[in-house]
Length: 296
Image (cartoon, rainbow, N blue to C red; front, side, top):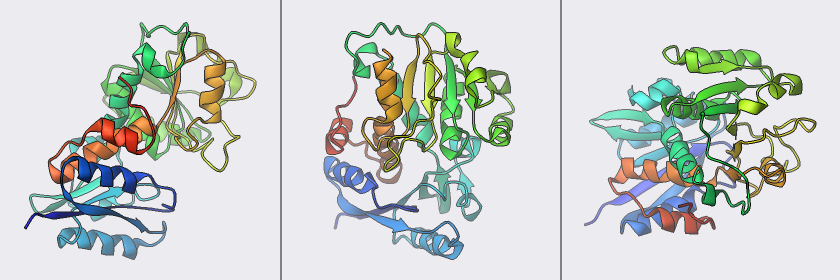
């Protein structure tokens, strides 16, 4: 009898997650039986988290995704971390590997895979743009929370110089301290228009890793209202609900190419799925499932 893969996602809240739709499409793409369930666990319910992980240890679940607010809280409950998860300091994928409950992070490679596809000019969905592919790799990361960890790790390892700007400077400094071997390529700057203005001429990429602009607060943006956009930068907003955030809409109106994080969502899901099942699902199928056109 063919194995049925019981997969799922834990976090809180999970009401609008696209992950079940993506992973069910991945199962179908690979010709596998199984399902993908949501396990909402509030941030203070450590016992609930432990009980869910026990199901993974017993083989009742075969793979688990982790999202806010458990990406770091789950680490002490695991037996091992992959080098990527250890370096990022956050886990979004859990599986049993060689008898050990192992945490991995597919956010970092998922982001980078989607960014590289978007960096082909024709994929930014902005006909007539004067945007040129950057000669220098200089990025500004807005936010220093859990998502920013994966983004900064991915960029630095791809040769980017990264400046972090967060409303809580201590959080930005803590993120930088997490990468002691690469700190010469990571710096921080005050989250203030005057400070950010000094960066504009050199920037070739802006990434929003904050929740600002996420539904239902669709009229918010992490970019200061009185600050112009850089003359030759691309914008990547990790927020994908709504499909066109205020940041993406205003960046495009200013003549910049911009994309949301929907492609990253698909890529990280596909990489998690491959860890659990050994099968790499058809990316085009997954993009179609969430109503997006795959870049490239």
